[in-house]
Length: 127
Image (cartoon, rainbow, N blue to C red; front, side, top):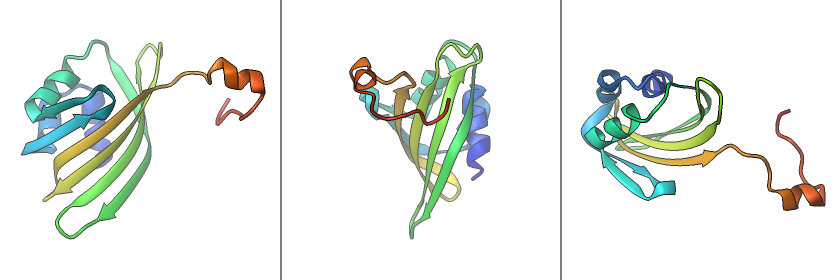
């Protein structure tokens, strides 16, 4: 499975292409909002989300198992106007080159809280 092509389809909100990557019985969990989707529901949630999106896959890890493979991605996602950004960590289980389950954790990209700034601890990952 080409994980970068999968993410390209997700960011383009391309229902037909997204569907090609999933087993018909797959499920998707968005843990930060306590939501569980089947493939059709995931496609609705993704493709009907307002706006036009872009992003970059920052990291890919693959773990080969006996009965399935696990692909872990870290992707930065942002609207094309760059008004905000999010990091999503995805744990994608595949079997026979199809996604059978996906667990995702979405986080808003924000500044450090003021109390940590006031303590002058930590630094920037990137300027």
